[in-house]
Image (cartoon, rainbow, N blue to C red):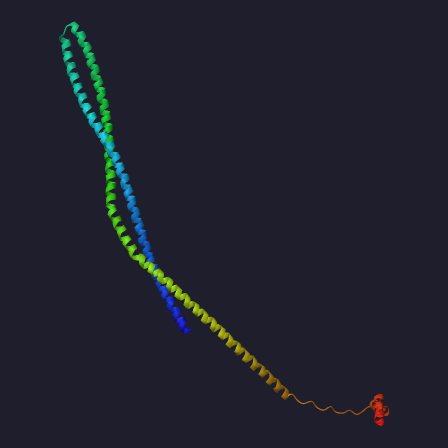
Length: 286
């Protein structure tokens, strides 16, 4: 029994040590798997974010190029309108001078021409005003587009800087997982085997304890039987001793016969019973 208890203790300690090691390795394995998943999902999210930012940047660049083209076109139109305005103003000055020195017939024609030139100049001023307004609006949109483009480029640079660390984390966690998983599986099998061995020893210890209890019960029953027999013998001995010590009964003293008793005795002597008579007759016949 002592050897079984020692074996049980040894197997229990062995299983506890294996279970402790298995739990430690399992914790490390879970951490490695968690890091691997985080880095992997981080890389996927990073790539998706990069694609979204690239598309957004392309869209912003497209709008920016359109605005720059429109700005350049407006600049050309402004220059052309300013040149025409300058020409019209020069022509107006010439016509004005001619009308001062021309005849009355020429003045009428020149006045018509001046009115026409004034209308052209007014139209050119309106056109230049519209061009200036469109130009300032485009400049604001181009400035906003440039800021948006710069912001997207900063985000893309951050994404590029974040990628190497995630890649390195993925490599390290994958390596840790490949190292820890076989170790964990081996410890798991060892723990299972140790558990089975411990169960066998526990069963043997339980059987030995049961046999010991039965044996002890038999011994206890025998002891109780012996004790009962001994108690019975003691009771008999005590009873015999008490009987031996008890005093003997005294002989009863014969009382003197009274008158009535004397009469009875005399009568009995005088009158024999019928049975005695019959017996006497029989004896005589013989």
